[in-house]
Length: 275
Image 1 (cartoon, rainbow, N blue to C red):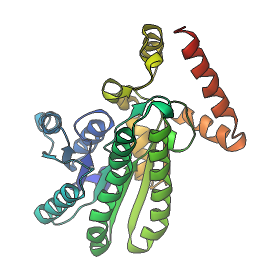
Image 2: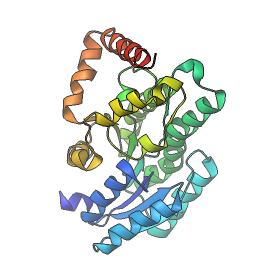
Image 3: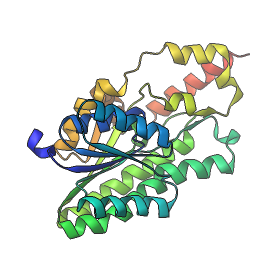
Image 4: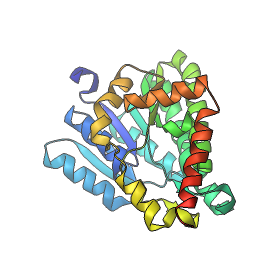
């Protein structure tokens, strides 16, 4: 396994925290040179410092993945400096929670610009480099919400469904050029995205509903990274983690109405608790 990673070059967007930081540290331990890229440069620099403190190789760069020129510049500069790019993790993402009626057009555009277009920009920029190399692995972070419907996450779910569809199609095309494409579909995890995600529907911010969310037992990225990266190493098209969340995916495929009905009941409960 170590030979598969040793002395490789990896770019990880959203590398300043959460799943992105966990991917960075996982790779660095295995002798990958990691480029932690994040809109928050301070967070990316913290990831770099963590890796260097344990003897790993890393650098940190700022990038706003919703800006095509910034993404292009990042990828071109890394390729020019290191001579190749072995892995690109399009991992940066944002969320917004609430009923569709409460979302503004600004909310809708911002989520799509980061989650979907940010992925497209990354792939578009690295693809010719990997084609010329004749190798490379693109890993796009979607979500379990990209495989099943949800409640109160309409635009987030739409953006992640788009990433899944795009990635699977690109996987079919890219293989002829020696390029691998995988899609990470993590279920709900405790990361800093929960602190930065806005709840636009008022009842979601009630004390009882916030407490209900806080009391739920969810894994952190460190709990799932080995399974996640095993899927990458085996070049899986879709990697669902935690493994038990595959049940929801299969259930949705067998009984498509089950999960929408489940979320309908959850929303009704949340509303009733604030009346």
